[in-house]
Amino acid sequence: MTILQAGTTRRQILAGAGAMMAGAGVFGGVRPAFALDPIRQGYQTNIWGMPTYYLMRSGLLEKHGIKFEEFAVPSGNLTMQQMVARQVDLGTYAGQSFILGADKGSLVAIALIEYVGKTARVMARKELGITKVEQLKGLKVANQVGSSTGNIFTDTIATSAGLKKGDFQEVRMNVNDMVAALAAKTVDAIVTVEPYNAIAEADGIAVTLTDFSPFDKMPVFMAATPDFVQKSPDTVVAYLKAWMDVAKDFKDNPKKVADVIYSFFTSKGYSMSQETFAKALARVEVNPGFPADLKPYLQEQAEILLREKKISAVPDWGKALRPDFMAKAQA
Image (tube, rainbow, N blue to C red):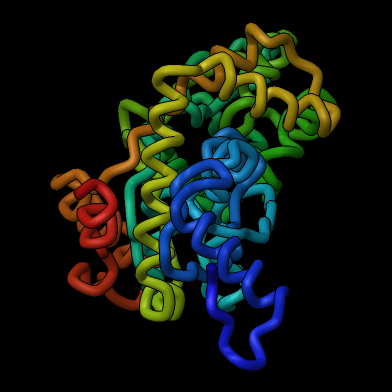
């Protein structure tokens, strides 16, 4: 028999019992005994953001006791800008955008999520007969200016092909608008990512001049605001544990993952076969962690951005890189 303290109500008893059962995992999934903070999750709606989309649709965040609010944008550099403005807590983008965010908003990297160098391509209209990047001289090239792909194209790929600023007409455009522009012949070439380049190729609109992998493996980071990691360190660790579960699904249950993500693009009106989509998704290498070679890579990219006067200084990596959270998640 339970002895009730004076003033204890039935609702309080049930609430307390419910909390104990939830902590013990009675309601499905092991939940932490402590309260976790909700997160504001930013993600881009191209293929780079789809592992994050899957994270939010898989139920894995809820399994680890995390509530979330999502913020979708066309590309990661826009998520980065939202984070600099403190409108979003967490978001993925490639190294160049992360460096810009660290410089402008003291953003920190809590993990490498994926490699996407094979997903980004420079493509040209098929009927032009172009096979090399250097042949873009004098042509209209759609580029998402300020994005990681945009920076790598102008600062590395174009210069490697002997093209300097002014040798081609750069047309500012979001990646999700580029295939339509190419089909309408308002541009001659595009710098875009999956699945848009797979669609352009499958529909016979464009041919690939190069993907980005020979120039940059393009690690994509999960970044966080310094405010969030300081306020919610336990949430960050639980969040990364959810990401480890996502990686397991990508490895062990790729069809389940592909079905969830394919439904996202078809719901937005994109027309592509499941075969085309599967090829696009296979170019994303999801493996959350914190490899030892990240710092040298970021240092090299930061020096390029500093030389191009896109950042004020090379970030302090001791502050900008936080491998300690992933180490706790993996322990």
